[in-house]
Amino acid sequence: MNVKQTLDTKGLSCPMPIVKTKKAMDGLASGDILEVLATDKGAVNDLSAWSKSSGHELLDHKEEDGVFKFWIQKG
Amino acid sequence: MVKALSAKEVAKRVVEGKMFILDVRNESDFEDWKIEGKGIESINRPYFDLIDGVEDVLEHLPKEDVLVVCAKEGSSVMVAEMLDEAGIIDVYYLEGGMKAWSEYLLPVKIGDLKDGGSIYQFNRIGKGCLSYLVESNGEAAIIDSARTVEAYEDFAKENNLEIKHMIDTHLHADHISGGRRLAEKTNATYWLPPKDAEEVTFSYEALEEGKDITIGNTKIEIQPLYTPGHTIGSTSMIVDGQYLLSGDILFVDSIGRPDLAGKAEDWVSDLRDSLYNKYNNLSKDLVVLPAHFGKISELDEKGAVQAPLGELFEKNEGLNIESDDEFRRAVTENLPPQPNAYQEIRQTNMGKIDPSTDEQREMEIGPNRCAITE
Image (cartoon, each protein chain N blue to C red):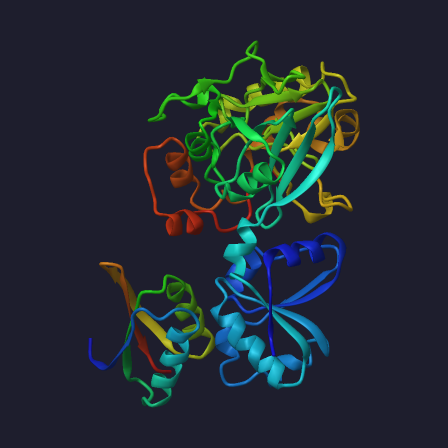
């Protein structure tokens, strides 16, 4: 996957992962892929719901050793 | 300045007051489970739609007294601060979020016992779980304990009670029992119906008919009555000849579902026999005290859930199904979704797995869903 930028929100709790993701996304161009790392479990549901409501696409996500990874393509 | 509102204070508003709630969790979480009450009005707007500003939501909110709610607290503080800046007077956030709400227990006195002593209901309003404390002469028994046992420990301390018995009416699938943990801590006896305990990894005392449990010098009697159906071991208890602790067999507004251990078809006839024969032969003056409620409207003005058995035989639809076939359909078809993580919760209650406190908390999120109707 052609990741444009990686955002590390490990250790941060809600709402910071989304606040930071949104900020990072504002700096990207349509079609760019943002990779987000998070440890907050709530981020899984919230990032997918947020992507939907803001017109981005959550391409994939997975968990590795307690770290959630998300790939979001800007709409 | 935004202010924190504790789960205890919110419970007070749910039982007897009013509150406007802005729930900022995502839509599916809100639809699944939220704070409800006679005087509670709520709307949902996910926090991530409010990061750029709260202008759009202002017109849907009252000018003062708004409670912002989220899963754990963080997002509600952020949104509450934005509402405060936008000029709303008295903005609160729910301290500890829905996690704290799910865990709060409201103690309500149900009544006195004949020879001294009394019985209390501990209402876990957020999840719809009801547990009981029976006390007499400085001794106490706790029935269907919640995972968070601190509420009972504090109560026992304040009232100088020694906890002697921890009793579970059945192996729970919706919440993690605090029975074993508090029994170990206080040296109390942990009672469990043996037919529900075949796979447990710890020792326990068998809760069976004929083994009456007494508390205090005045010999408050707790009589077990085998009433299978929700689980194969489900055992009701008659306390002091006055109260019927019906576990997950009979609720005020519904009846227990037989499917949570994966054996719905097998247990239908047990459930029918327990409700329509065993319960029907009991005194209709017994006050039914169930282990759950489904709707907030089941709470009385003190926040308690109770009803005379005779009244339930008249009004509860689950006790008024004529044919066996119709009953079978009612308790096996079109059931609500199962409780969150119910398989893992059963495993935890058997001692087979030992999740961390955070994991246990996560597993218990959501309503109890132990009845055949929502």
